[in-house]
Length: 308
Ligand code: KIV
Image 1 (cartoon, rainbow, N blue to C red):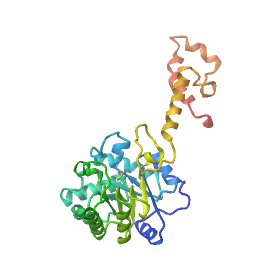
Image 2 (image 1 turned 90 degrees about the vertical axis):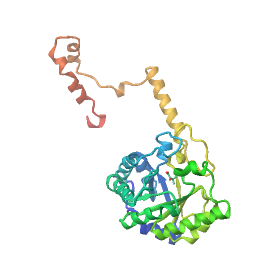
Image 3 (image 1 turned 30 degrees about the horizontal axis):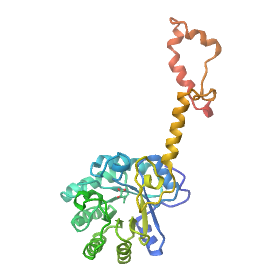
């Protein structure tokens, strides 16, 4: 847990809905590990999403389909433990909420209990309404996700903008209303046109959170690694604004370290521990019992400078 959140109160679904009412934008950032979650909280993020985008940006996969419930639980537990104020939502991975309601609830329960999430996100519209209703009835806040739903990328045929034609747009709007009716507390709209996002946002009383869906949603979500250009092979995306080039900073810093070790300019005297002068000769006496006791002593020596 961190103090970085200062006096801010933990976010709730009630507060998120009130933010929509007041026209206060909702900020969502994906998070997968302890330091990034802490940094996102310190930056003031309202919601942290442990997205299955971790399949892409953490695991280096082409799609999110390989992400398992255990992966999500592992990362969610870490993120939840790192923060106090943001509302932590965990993605339910591919094919973990399409079987029986009992199986879905068992998966949702694991994410909530073991991951310590405050809510879950499910992709899809009318087809997943029973799953949404069951989770909500069990006391679990559910975030919907419409438009480009990456878990269905092979049906959709690629990562492309959704709902451009009126029939497709009407279906998204109708699905959005059904999800709200089923009890969802918020809805992610991924890669839909600005016009469709605005219409959905106006019709719903729950907040919409856009990604690649224009400025008229109630909030925005971006992937942590995209905001920071954290990684080497992230191709630029039209809908992403990067605020730093952390990838270049990290690569240069690591290259400097490698260079320093290669040319023996690291470690320096200031990074180095020493024995008592008088003990040094014993090091070279092979049968001296003092040498056997050495590793423990050396470990005790290796304490941070400020603890000495
Ligand atoms: O998995 C994810 O990170 C997401 C966001 C991009 C909305 O679903």
